[in-house]
Length: 212
Image (tube, rainbow, N blue to C red; front, side):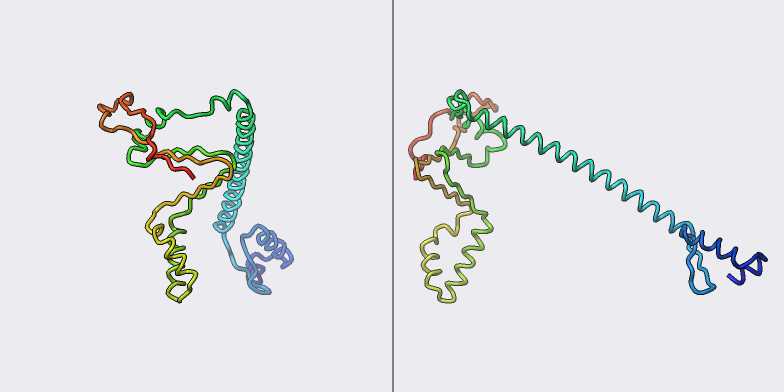
């Protein structure tokens, strides 16, 4: 600052006024009692850009939040409409799926290589489908406890040994009426040239129905 006063031949107070303004807008910063370090415009531009990006992100976030509220409103409206429809007597009379339709579905490209299962169960039926990874961890834990001579773990492992190799498990429980599980199949021998009307629409035999 002393060098600037000598070169400009002005009062030091004027230099202070100028440096205070430049420091306020981020062009310089004081490095000592009489020292000044130039910061330049690039840093200011970066800060302005960051502020601009932050404002843009905040606007995007607000737009997403408003869109999410709209989706939630539509979902709630659909749930209300569904509940009203389900309570109507005419809906209860027509709320069924024909085996013919399920058989055609099982022959579609999406399900052709998969096993399609239909379930009829009374209200309040409990259905559990464990995660295969959880089942694997469960048996791994049993084996570890059994190796440590845990009698209970050994008994459970022996009793449920047949379930260990099952990739998927389906547990269902009903306290009122029976639960019926249908394995939906189609007669692939009758499917020619992709004509869906050639599908077998016969009802499943008793071997395909399991009651509990």
